[in-house]
Length: 170
Image (cartoon, rainbow, N blue to C red; front, side, top):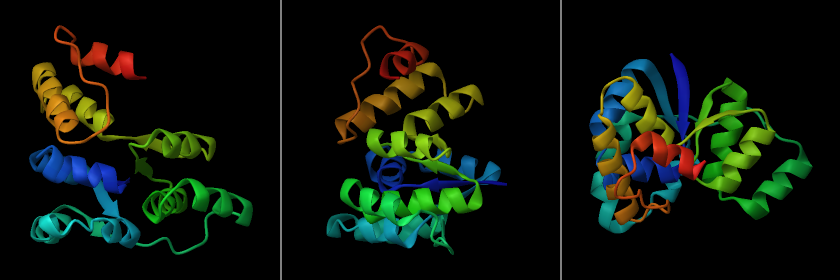
């Protein structure tokens, strides 16, 4: 099973923001779903603690990078740009040759520079659509729900298909 390593934003999007747990269950049959202790540490909202305490172990395995994946210059630059979650996700993805599930543009850009495989919440929705787990309309509905619940993405147009939306945000 290919590992997919989720950053905090993607965990929140599949959990309380988007209520996409059924998709995680399906993805968990195909991919090894991982998060790092640093990502767990970023799930700090006390109002969602009971949810996260049940959600995380139900869908993810927690794993730390075993090695230092980056040189000192890269680590120093990352420390200024990112939180520990993004850094640990990229480090573990590099170590395991895994896919990093990152939603933040700057983190995605750096991951690409490092040669990492990446996807994000919207990419996983598209994966679900391609597998016929969700319809085009359901993907748009989930995208609107995510956007209305705090995920910083453009709102889909009224007459856009999900494929058109993907093209527009790339």
